[in-house]
Length: 450
Image (cartoon, rainbow, N blue to C red):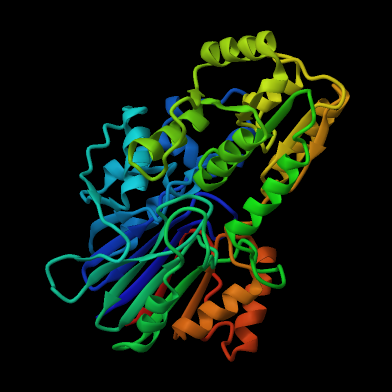
């Protein structure tokens, strides 16, 4: 059976992930993501109003025109998890393919909300839920199957999909960290990865997320970040001024910890910002998390400002707002607070807790720097980097190579500099550039089996 891989997006940057795998006449697309930094560098761009070709030209979504060179029919579109760099282009591109979108329940719900929020392209693809540990048949040959393997990441309900073919398995390894004691959900299923590496024809190809491939050591568990956050917030228990926290809206585990520790130090947590309300509300509605009954979630700007007024009237010392804006995004809640554009007034000594790292990309780094400077000018004390990454460091990559023992490797989710540490690791394990390490670019085809 011919096996061909199209590296469509995310092979020159962190963002706009999209990969297609052809097994015979059957094609499966993994991810359709947005590169948010390419949107943010343009002031007041509203992607909902833009045509897909314009977004392709500005580098915001994958250029999927290479798909016309793949001989076969798309049988499924499979987003691995609910981050925008993996699902953000579905509402722009999925309508081009007569195929269902197959994902875990939380991811499917986020995809559904995105499609409903943007009807410009009339995306009507069927939405199919599949849980980690399940398998479905792909196409009519009866020899190709799609399996979801549970992984841990900085969002709940993440999986690595595996396409089983007569020539071996294609494992799509974006995005994960090796967490054996997560705060929410099940640990990463390393036992299943080891089985896949040793059954049948083994692993024909492993496509791997290289976000942290240049970092030594092992990525800590989310439980480590939880203890760090607990230590920081408990140290503020006697402070009688304002405490504000920010984290990734999609990081439900971290939001859960913030809510719990706010209560522990005698403050009422409240979630503020559109994306904060969207992700946490969805997680609660699908029973992934059980928040306190009195937890307020407000996304609309007028509702948020009313909440800020209530906090100022009743006393900042009684509340802990958890807000959007950890990357310094211009229109996010924390940035508005830093600019003095909300009813919440920051005073000398007030605490701002960043339970997130800057995404290593120039636009984010510049915006975050500006936000922190503005907060400091208002007298705020910034607590930075209370976080663990959602991506594997080098020792995690080594463990995955040992588990899967792939015949071919395609590094992804970085630029060439970011891929270098992973290529070096693979070469130290006996792989070779140009032979079985395939460093690709966006828009390329890799023929694995003729």
